[in-house]
View 1: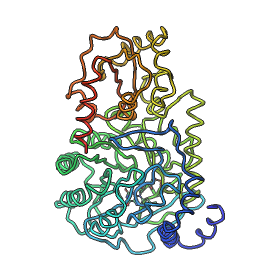
View 2: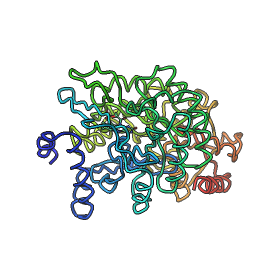
View 3: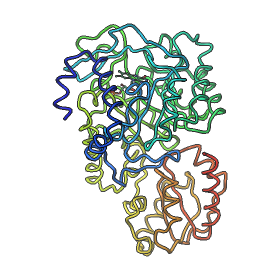
View 4: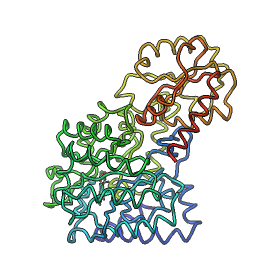
Length: 472
Ligand SMILES: Cc1cc2nc3c(=O)[nH]c(=O)nc-3n(C[C@H](O)[C@H](O)[C@H](O)COP(=O)(O)O)c2cc1C
């Protein structure tokens, strides 16, 4: 369908085409049959791709990138386009018209876009009202937040505080945008001092996850440092990357704005890997920039991305691509012998090799009793523990002789993309999980080994309850 529409859309200027798509998709919500038909066609819902991150359920890992739905007018269309989650915005405290037009260009040969929008948006009051009618949505929603052009740098922190305050009950998580090339001096704020102070303040306003989005043009060491400082001060994840101002990447560049799409792929991947080497396992990582195929998406996942996003490739290929990417990830996982996406996340970064059997626990298609009797499994567990785990968080142990029951699903859900291990009683020497351990899990988000002992079931259940209460 998109193949038929694309030549027409590409005849009009890109901003008008995007506006047309926005009007069509926001009107189409009045026709649920159409959305249902699209959702059946494009939305991939396979338990192997389900993840619970920050207590949010991601049905598939592919999301829209910031800027795609600046004003939150297309939210209801997200599932029908195949996306498993969406990032809205960038929103600023006051409405903004953005930079002068034209401010977005196609580089068709390179399958790239160049945009100099400058945070044009309806402002937080209007967008918050719009979200009021929709939130909570069936898919996780993030909000990309930016400062107004006229706000002086010294007062920038205030803009971000206003945005988090106004939106904290209307969105699932936030992405702090100080990496857009289209607001003068914004990228100067990508320094350790500002970011540390910013996250410290923002995290006093809400417990909801707040992530930082980086620019691909940063020096790699600085990027890693800024990301680390953000995480140390409470950031719950890193999004890499925004658009680039490396105009050598396209044949006929404009002299303003940021470039996205295929040509950004390498640069964005390089930065993502640098970040992942430092932060994988310590925080949640999201990769964006030039992702245009299942292979590229899977490469980012193996490099440590729990979630991925795209914008430009969607403009060039439509919802078929989102379906292809999700299906392709499943095929590639199968080829590698993985039963759940959590097994693939970060395998190229870290050496933790998870036996398939354990990952099957996440999808629930394994008989626990049989597994526990398997001598090989027990041996593997020991070996793996010695090799990788002692320096990680190990939470108590089994034997848990029942098959999957409600409580198991509860903990599996709770753990989301953690790695879940089950073992026999010989490891009872480990202490039961304490609040401190759970707090640690919560603050570090990522891949952890969790071991559950029937004896500690009660304690764990209470801890989980406590944790749920804490994030709600
Ligand atoms: C037209 C356009 C508008 C964008 N607006 C925003 C924005 O408001 N906030 C943001 O963080 N990123 C914005 N981006 C950057 C994207 O979120 C993304 O990081 C970048 O385009 C790289 O991904 P891609 O190669 O898949 O497009 C925008 C990108 C495009 C093409």
